[in-house]
Length: 261
Image 1: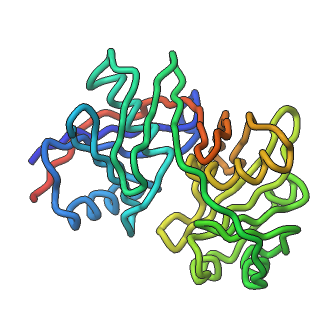
Image 2: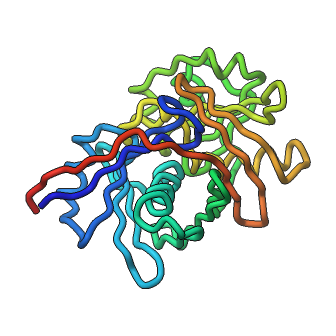
Image 3: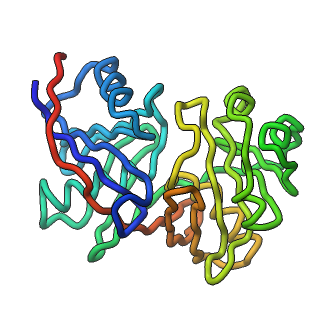
């Protein structure tokens, strides 16, 4: 079976930045093990697979090692592929996922993702600071740990023990600090337990970052930046129990793959 494959850099307006995701539109579902093998072969943080369903799509995401419950950059990449190549007049896309319905709206060259927020609970776990190589000023339990540091320089300097991070009881560590020069907050995300040593630009991380920073800064609209080597930019708005995440995307690769299923 020959299938189309796209590689898209998400949460950036230029190539070789943001977070690369593979996107594979399907005529029918492949076996789970086949999709996991394709994701492992792609060796990107996420590979997205989607299938038309009613007036929308069913969407699934795979890291190189596991199926994910939620992924922002591969959702943005999927919407980009649909509205740029498959249905160029389409401006609103509904995706049915493990995390419920996710809507993406295209506004010119930008995309707006409607995602659920993640709850935050104050936490005490010395293993987090030890794994990160620096004790955070605040620690919260969410889907990952949210570790708050004093400055962007502190977050940039982190050099975590990835084996120790993978051994933690939650899905990695999301490190954050106040931003600078018009950026409200910065972040880095480490999820080696899911096959992602450091994620370059994590859309779903805003589901935890926005509730924290909106409360701390007393503003609902914020600009975030992921300060990984590739970098990523997020324009976000907190709306009750949802967060709108805005970003751009660019296509790096269009091709096809041949698989047995």
